[in-house]
Length: 257
Image (cartoon, rainbow, N blue to C red; front, side):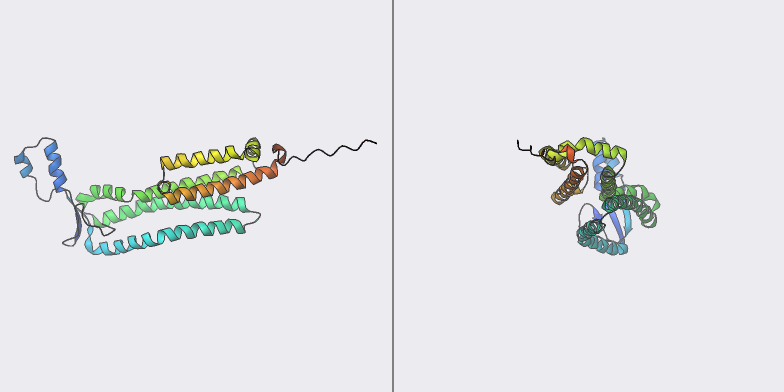
């Protein structure tokens, strides 16, 4: 309906947007064994749900079109600006990365709250009292992608915060980096193999909307790869003695007299 697609029992005539489930009601009656005489007594408007006024539908459809056009470009712009902020914050990049993670988590929480508030307002204002419950269920189904985006944004933000904390100066983080240093410094194949396995596992699982699209998997894999490179540089800098590549060779023996 919001994408201006017809069918699926949705009509916009007589000034109202309605969902006609009368045929479904009849089929359910047949499945539970109601007689033809009983089915004939079902009113013609049984299963017809009024969703909203059709004169308000046009504005909603325009808003959906605008979201489709801007969503991809806004996502790219946000990521580029965050990356630029982290790059410019020389000397404070870890703290800036942590703040970016918290920003993602807070935005995700706001999205979940806004979805609930807008749904409650729209249903109270547009749906009749009799149809509020089915209209609410339909809204939850149709706006489920917003719920997934909100949950995913919170999860991504917390992952970024965890990475920034892991790279921080706390005692437990330093100890963990010390234990990871031999693998990161000398056995890059193991580290990159583990990262590739994690990406494949997440792509097969698809816990978020982005990870069910090829561009989302590539973007997530690229960000993880950048994080692994930065983390390895830190372990090489902090624990060079844990790497055979950076151990200084022994001084040459003095020639015999």
